[in-house]
Length: 553
Image 1 (cartoon, rainbow, N blue to C red):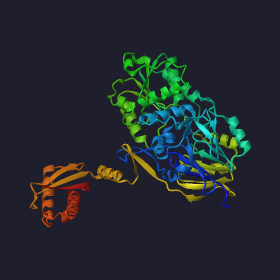
Image 2 (image 1 turned 120 degrees about the horizontal axis):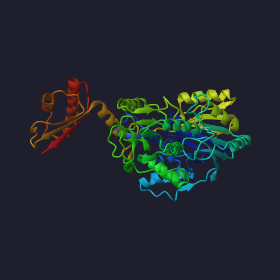
Image 3 (image 1 turned 135 degrees about the vertical axis):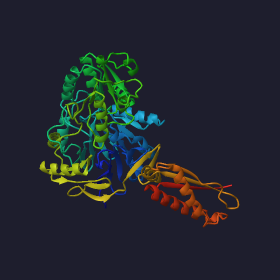
Image 4 (image 1 turned 45 degrees about the horizontal axis):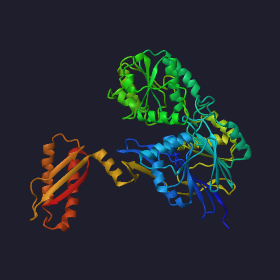
């Protein structure tokens, strides 16, 4: 008889930061029940033109959706919940989240015109739920967003602690403190394995407190005399409250700028947070307030092209104007990959005589992830038998394994996306199989494979340009007039000369085919495509994506 197994399988977020999606299974191989923990996205870079969002390929769990007990969300950051609307339509299962996260999930589905009410179940803070063989307890942690939760997952084979994203913040300002007492109890009860955040494993000391950031920002703002613009992650409600607090203390009004900032503010208010702050004023009304009496809190801290901060700096925002002597505070981390565009933005502002304050020059931000001393606290509380690092690039996870061994954890498992880890039964957890995995790109409103033709074509066009050739053929097989050429993205100095030479090449190639026969059309199209690309390569060094049209009249 085959024994019941307890399995763990990351489909995203292991070997990368972002796109977190983790699976757990329990039961005999033919009768296993599954749960999904988080459904996150990552954001595309310039190598994927036209695509903004990428999420894990859920094919492996879609094939098992009849045995899926539900999706459990730890918190509302996009790298943990951003793919929920895309995945849910393939699964049609229950979703479980705490109140603040649930409000934002509802909003995501509302934008897709989907009523999720009957499938979304709200779990109270530190609450519990039973999903098949899984008894799940939410554990309040601290992070850079409201209501971050670790998950104690109890099965007949033993207990797992899935930390989600967290840090140890003794003064989180808004929301509860980390539930260290319960974590200690969980450790005393016994934990088979801890699946743990690895993001800041290279950072010594502690990640810091929001209270300390508030004190320093208040000091900074007290010494600034003109207009202040603060840009931060909209999801960081504690930082948002800090800006309200500092505005009030310095005798300023505050105005929220950017759709995400308004959305998070409304969600926080709806859940009972931000009740004792001053009322924000509309950016249109803020234009009538003197420079030294206003603070703008806006989106775009990473230099996003359509973010409020970029539009303000380019003087195209309809409501917010910036001028010499003003100050911009970037109260956020510079996410790897955004250094160049943020450096360009900072330089642009400084050139205009605007003071730029960032984490590089002042203490205006703390991370939401655990530094090494925070990790030591968690290890000492939970005392797991095994550590499985996730939420990090390979270098983070390898370092986390080393750290775990320093903390006297005997069993560690280094995983990457698709690895299936058998946590129990057995002497120790280990990778024993591989699940199909990959990425899906949201291309417009459609999800496509990472090697999909639309992605390949757009990359080709981006790198090499585009050419469209239309040849009109009469009923007796003669080419009428010159071929019609549409050329985009090619470095051509004399377009008329280029077109004339290409048309000559097309005529020469066409003479070798009998145009009265439709059977030869595909061969002619292939031949002209080769001729066009070769000619372009000779003249420009580029081989554009080429489309050939034959039109008979």
